[in-house]
Image (cartoon, rainbow, N blue to C red; front, side):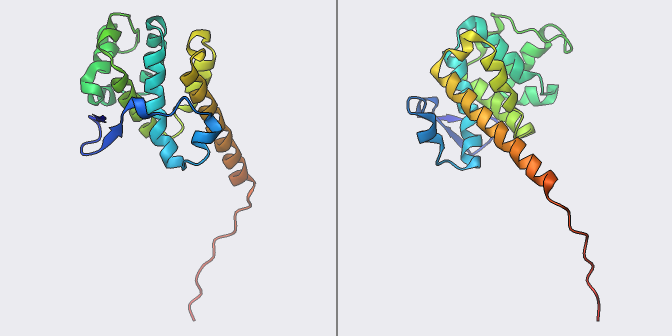
Length: 177
């Protein structure tokens, strides 16, 4: 089974059921490329949403909605998140339990994908948010996601520090003879 992704016409996402969360993280994710990992992260977020108790789903949705503007929210999952955003006024984001009845795990995958499109590392803070919630962090899929996001954030910080430590060569000009 595949899920049509409303934000990427012609492209298909694999089913949430295909996300490997039952195997050790190192075994599954050690061999994937960074771009493959970027494709899997939104699906893992959808699995976390699916496994989360209803009382915690609102926190996850709110976190994912915060960095997106109105136009982006209108284009994700047939505008379900834009409706939630405008319930209490645009500047007062509140996610109520009744709002979540219309949100499916596939919608959260689309939302996480849009957040990640905004910035490759925009999801990195999600690991910290999940780890701070004992209920969310208690699921196996959340633990997998937390580990991946922490590892990815650490690699990103390491890459940034390497770039800053490399001396920049002066610009060379071609000499005409």
